[in-house]
Length: 346
Image (cartoon, rainbow, N blue to C red; front, side):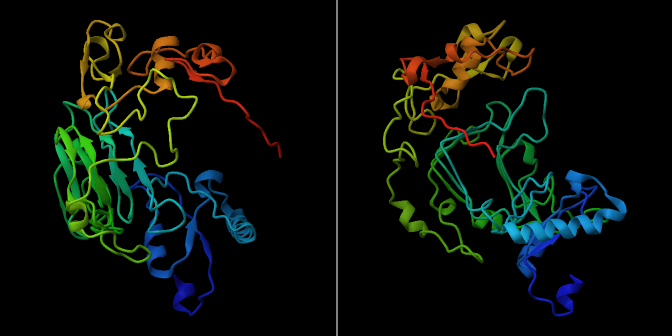
């Protein structure tokens, strides 16, 4: 920041001498730099390790290559995108199943976590949460120093928090604090969640506010009268030829009503399955409003490779000829094998 205090303005990238360890050991406050001075930041130290006396020279080379190639190197352990920098923000989640749950874990279990300065996302047509585990709709930042909602790990959404259900204030944790704009710039529409036990079409959640770099969306009145229909895909105009003819398209979404994915009881209690026979010592219970159909990869894992529903167990053997149809053609239950693939070797 001394450079800017001295009047230097032509700075395109900063290579920070930052450890990249998870907080509170170290904090990568990239968003503060982005918002205040508008430059891209990165740190290669988490990748290379501490290079001691060579660190300055190495980071100078990193900056020179970044300028030459117009690419900012990645920073490992930086899991939340910065404020409208690059392509990591302004993304859309569409027709995903996001449980946020893993057997034996009670932390890191929130389906949607958007920390401070994670802004301008769109979450549309998804199926969210784990039945019997998530009990709260959201934990959100209401100001830079306050949060409402309680335990984020039991929430469907954690929005604008700096750390686990907190704003990071105190002797150890400081800025970036909480960010209520992570809430106000988020578009949510037509998502099914297990806390609501239904699909939410809330106009107030679907009309994000304007912030720097991002214009405001439609007004809430627009969504109040909007049809609840969704396109099957944002990329494909029709069902792809390789999709199994006996499987529903789209596979996931609030408008899917014949989904086959449920939850096992017994040995694999809480894990996903598609038939009773996969649920050792128990049975399959229909969940998620039948809005989730297994995709071909899951069918291959469960039915051909006979993987455990909880994902545990020994390494499995994959035989493409067993999971893909021949010559790129699909069948009622088998996806067509990829065709026309090319490889470029540099």
